Amino acid sequence: MMRWLIALGTAILMGGCATLTPQDYAKETPKLDLATYFNGKVDGWGMVQDRSGKVLRRMYVELDCKWIGNEGVLDETFQWSDGKTEKRVWKIRKDGDRYIGTAGDVIGEAKGEAAGNSLRWNYVLALPVDGSTYHMDMDDWMWMIDEKTMANRTTMSKLGVRVAEISIFFRKR
Image 1 (cartoon, rainbow, N blue to C red):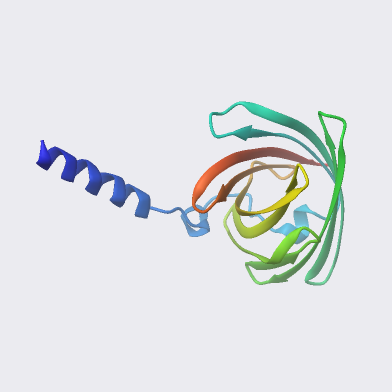
Image 2: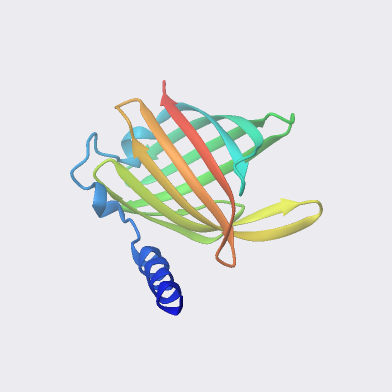
């Protein structure tokens, strides 16, 4: 029994070490470039799911994006299924395949790296809930599906515990 527990523990620990990176998608196309894709009008549809997979909220998001050289502004307006509206304005700087972004509800900077058809962002989001604000760790992945379609999957966690997942599909006009 003890050998079985040791083997199981080792497998779990080793599985936790296998982390995907954008480089795992380096050969995939079409190439993801935020300055190219998020330039102009983009629409998005998505949902937030809790740890069990239950859909908590659905959204439509409209983006108005502009880039000048290596600096971009992504102006997002979220329309939530509960009737609420939210705004987030990203200011993003591109440096080769790396991106640095800020927004009013992001603590510090978001940092990301693109390779092939993917981009991975990491940042801390100040999330207001019932009069309190929680700092949530965001692990945000984007993948180009085709020239006009992008998929986005974000894991939201606190102290290393997954709290929610956010899925959004974007379509460039």
